[in-house]
Image 1 (cartoon, rainbow over the protein chains, first blue to last red):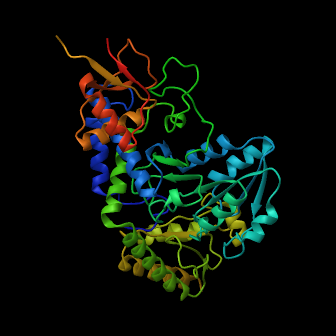
Image 2: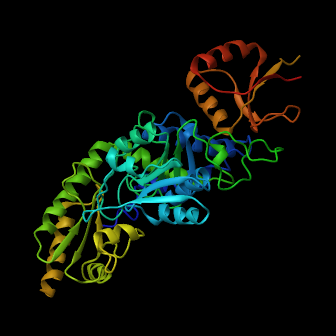
Image 3: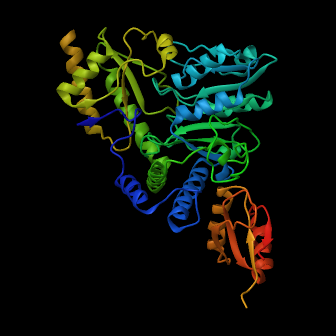
Length: 382
Length: 75
């Protein structure tokens, strides 16, 4: 089996991750819910994870990191917790439904939404002139993905963040594809909110994610309830990070995420990114030579996520993906990838696209096998 | 006669765990215990020390930028 669906979830997870999850089930109680050994062990584990994630992302301190179930929950928390009827928000056609659907919901409640168009290569114009043209008196926030999950194209968040800072906009970044790939330095970057998931490039299990909230940014909670603090208060505590974490935390998930980050740090993020970038370029060069294969995205950019999406002639993407799985045991993702506007911009809304995504655990030999398979599939049709 | 005790209270569990981590690394005295029922604090955990250790601990905590809520003498 050749797994080239790393952008859906990374696989295979490191042994350290599964061991940490098992250990947490055996050695930890509930975090923040008591002073006995097992409860304290859980609280220590949660705090260590916050601390190390904050360090990993270059955040100010551990209290900036809130745990959620995934990037979708983090984005819902940010968007519903910051925007009010009458506000205007700017986003892009690169977005995943985890951004678009909360925004459509908010639009129905009186929030104004502007969506920046993408070109046929999946790029958006985030120049100062372009962004200025979309500003309104009531513009409150800009939300965008750091990298498209369809094309792998990245957005220059430093430049967009500077624009937001100058115009007093809250800048929300969807880092679902980039946390664990890009080297963040959040305390020195004008990003107010960064939403991430644990199970992709951070190598944790599914069901754990998080949100970075810059000190001073106040987000309304999505849920309130048990917090382990201020028991007799009628309202949920306002102090971060507990303000945004009602209910029991996913301790095994947090243990796995912490182990995933430690694994990544032991390899070196720069090295991992280099290996994955090389694999992506190698595969792109290979597919570019195939007759009848159309590749989407901007491959001139110096930095992009390790994703190559393509179609073979006029074949629906699901059939190509199915054939790759059935005949070659090569696992990819087909269809719309939950990013409808991106596909419309690329002209692939009818057929979707076959997405190949890589990690440092893949090899050139695996990619050669995939290239041969694609050549056979396209050759059969010519 | 038992020694007088003091507890340091916190606003959040995160503050309490940060306090414990740094104190352990620095070799500072004390340990986390559940909040005694006779006091009121926001976090359910407090840092317990002997009263004679209070001055040294709090001086060092200030130097290290550690956050807490109150320091309360147990009676």
